[in-house]
Every structure is written in structure tokens, then in C-alpha cells.
Amino acid sequence: EVQLVESGGGLVQPGGSLRLSCAASGFTFSSYEMNWVRQAPGKGLEWVSYIGSGGRAIYYADSVKGRFTISRDNAKNSLYLQMNSLRAEDTAVYYCAREVTTIDFDYWGQGTLVTVSS
Amino acid sequence: QSALTQPPSASGSPGQSVTISCTGTSSDVGGYNYVSWYQQHPGKVPKLMIYQVSKRPSGVPDRFSGSKSGNTASLTVSGLQAEDEADYYCSSYVGGNVYVFGTGTKVTVL
Image 1 (cartoon, rainbow over the protein chains, first blue to last red):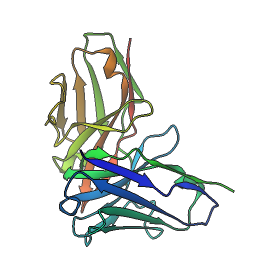
Image 2 (cartoon, one colour; image 1 turned 90 degrees about the vertical axis):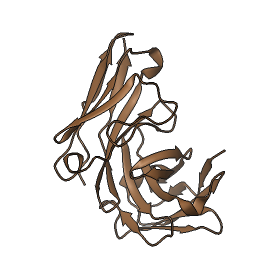
Image 3 (cartoon, helix red, strand yellow; image 1 turned 180 degrees about the vertical axis):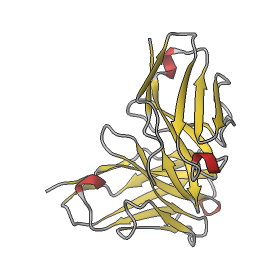
Image 4 (tube, one colour; image 1 turned 30 degrees about the vertical axis):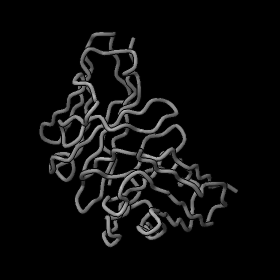
């Protein structure tokens, strides 16, 4: 069974940092592109970042470029999102999602809540 | 990377059809046949319903169909059922593995 489990969310002050993790199981993690998608409370979905299966191709939404860094460790079946210079508008549930074909996310984790507030 | 435009709400009675639009530009929806649709029930994770404009993943009822004309994609739910009441989001490829979601549409079954 495919499983994606996020962790690392929590309360952080504006300007602070947080590192999210996504543990994958039930499939060959190294064969799949992965993404982070977020959803602010009561709001819509926002694509955050993409990483290729080998970890070399990386893309970001303009809203997080220069502040967030996506990475993966295929040996550990894990995806990461390092978030720096956090702002109140980064408050959201962050989901990791498996990309089965271009832009098609077939499995999602349950999400981890990040709250940026003083 | 501006969000694609969807109507905030749509509704229909059981058995009827409802169509949701997703309007972008020639740089996203109009430029590629990579438009997907997701269903999200309250408190749940999104579920892929349509991919590559009009294809259905295994297990998705054929009541769900997708299409595209120019810069606007559409999702039609035929034979509405109570369990179809949810939020629906479109998404599009923008180029270089950059993606954008729509603003979301709340579908109500009357």
C-alpha cells in the first residue's frame, strides 16, 4: 500500500525556519517525481515545489522561491522541504504528493500544519 | 503563476449535471494538454479525478468527464450524487515542471 507521511510542522515565529519531511513507503520512491502542495486554512490548493526522481530537476512557485528548498534522499525513501524566512502567509497544511505523470498527483499524504505567528 | 479562475460555487439536483470551468491563459491551460481535476471533501486529501484534460484514473466513475477549449478547461459531473458534494480544483502545467491550481469550486448537491 502506498503511504506518504509528513512530519515536522508546528508553530514558528515570522522569519524562522522549519524542515518538513515526507516518509514514503509501498512503492519504489526513487522512480517517482515528487511535489509539495499547501493549503492555507479555509483556502484553496497552492503548488509549492517539484523535484525529479533523481533529485536534480527542481522547481518552485514564485511565492517561495529563494526561501524554500526541496530535496530528497532516495536511500531513505524521504522527501524534504526546508523552509526559511517564514511569513504569516506561509501558514498552511503542507502535503507531499506523488506525481504519476506530468502534473498528476495520484497519492497524497495527510498533511502537516505549519503555523507562522508571533 | 496566477491561479486559474474557477467559479466559487456550482450546484445541481441529484441526477442533474453540473459543469465547472477553469480559465487560464495560452501559457498554461491553452498551451498544454496537461490539465487535471481534483476532488476534495471537507477534512480530506485531494483525489485525482481527471488527468491530461479528459482521462479518468482507474476507479473514477464515468460520470466525471473533462474537456478543453482554448484557454478554458471544464469538468462535467453527470448524474449528480450526494457524494459528489465537494470542492473541485483544476490544475495546469505551466512549463518546466511548474504547476498552478485553480481557485476552487464548491459543488453543492441540492
